[in-house]
Image (tube, rainbow, N blue to C red; front, side):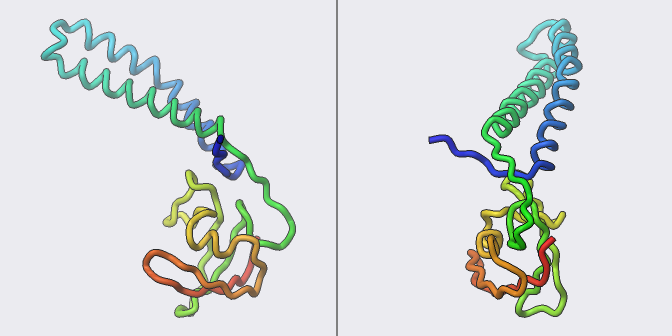
Amino acid sequence: MVYYQKMTPTGYQKIKDEITRLKKDRPRRIKILQEARALGDLSENTEYTEAKRDLGHLQSRLRYLDKQLKYAEIVEKSADGKVDLGKTVTLKFADEEETVEYQLVGQLEADLTAGKVAYDSPLGQSIMKKTVGSKVKVEAPAGEYQVTIIAIK
């Protein structure tokens, strides 16, 4: 069974951009490794060890990102008035006066400090497919709480 990772078009492009950047950096890292290897005894050559490790990290990251793109399911925003992946929602927490905005994104794109919450997080799952005015109970590991959906963009 293949598990496809849902993501927004922006998240997909961000991964493609990182792959491009890493591929451009690979020749430089290979050159550093070759220069370190030319220094002699590899058993005590810290420059060689570090360069080899850095190149290995780069290659590993490229494989990981390629796999993310291979199994990506890009979800476009719909205009159905319901909370869904890629949309921005304004929420009011039951115990607070202020509202907060979150964009629902795929797991790889989630960044709470940037206002991006994963669609499969407890909050994301609770508000998915709901409409403006819905009062939703969120069951999170730290306890349950209630939010009201104020707006959907």
